Length: 441
Image (cartoon, rainbow, N blue to C red; front, side):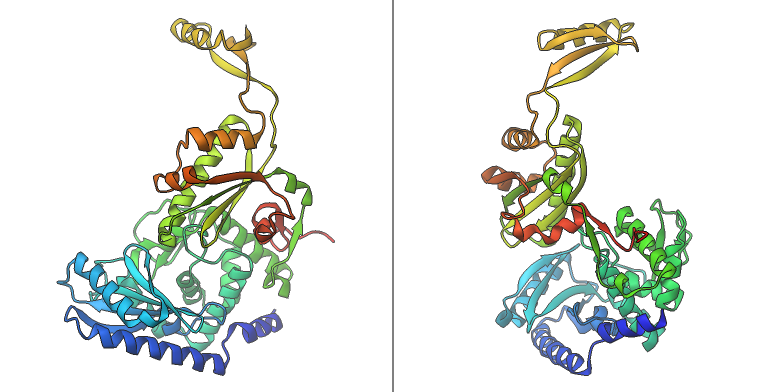
């Protein structure tokens, strides 16, 4: 195991040349931000944050976060307005744009490196005024308590989670954030100990110290805020997958746990339906929430009609979204049985009979004493069902996406030749993770 970790560190730890390059980019960015921030008395200071400031970044994920600390008296409107003014003016050469989390921030790209200009308030520990206020304290905490060796173990843990598809706290991913990996290493002191702890997690286990009760499957306490549960953003699916991968790695340590290996079942390709639609631009964070709500609504509608959804996947491109659904079946029987009330409930029986007698091919009393009706389905093909649903109902679809979907949408079955751009996302639908579910061969 130690040899494997050594090999991964060679990949996960940035080279001196890369560090120098990122430092140069970071200095260019912060000088520009400082220059424009100085024009506003509302801004107290500007400083680096995130994994770059903590020294836990990895070569393939090297964003640079710059925090502007506002004085406490600054209003929310000033907070937002000045952030945009400084961010756009300072990074205007690099095509900045607004992103949204709990509040707006500005993002741009310098030499393939994302620069985030994030506002926060200059507050005392625990007296939070904005969601980003904790970030400055996160940086100070980790710089104080993570040794250089532990920082390198954070990088290894990040690589482990990334390659197994469970890294990233954004809404569409619901995985482990970079900060959570740092919290794990802080609590368990090494990558190996973190993997051992993840492999043996118990339901409702609490990692860290708190007096507050949380309802999530596990609780990960933010070390600078014992009322905050970092696990709230992690889906049960990603948590379970991580536990299995950790168990497999401990049982049989292998480089394969850091290099994604898949086993495809091509038989399921025929049961994939795709909904594609263009969308008007909005923040990825807002779009993510709208897509999640829409996918849940579509899944519910298909399940209730009889097309059982096994899994779903999402691919967001610059101008359009693809929603993929793996179905148990794409066609249904022409007829279905609609079950009504028990015969002892007179009023309900009368109502059921009135609504169904003229629409049914057959009505009878079943063995449970309930009225049953044999009805013909309007749709037997899932594509026909979805085309009709997206044209007429849109029940449960996010209000923010309804106009986009109504304007143009396309419902098709997956085709390997026509849908080559979606090939990679098939892993999320028809692929068994080879490490989480190892074969006996």
